[in-house]
Length: 175
Image (cartoon, helix red, strand yellow):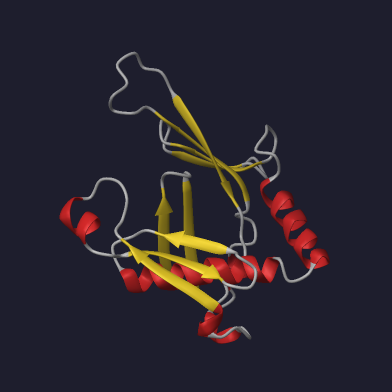
């Protein structure tokens, strides 16, 4: 199993790309709301902190498996934004890719220009695939909303309780 991640803390988004044999089958029960309960080390009054995270499983597209050409896209490389020192602020590693015909764009900002280019291209291709047909687009949105719900109560998949060192599977209420 191979796992790569992209963190976008400005939008509080983490994208994990996991590949392997029957990976969709293995992770089929992971979509939904995951809850974490913990006592942070900076907490002086003993209050428990609870955080939630929405997880959705969506297909990943590569440029090799699509009908688009490299000339259909405009690629811009810039210096990264935010903290990070010389490497982030002086090297042009951040990549913005725009599909010229539709105007759909994606931005990836990490340490490697090559991986940022690949990640941004995958995001643009995924968005193009979503927008290819309104029926397909609606089905994908319904699938995503079915997976994560409205992030309300009662839609939890799993609770990670670091206080008692337990993981509770909410679908079967089993520790």
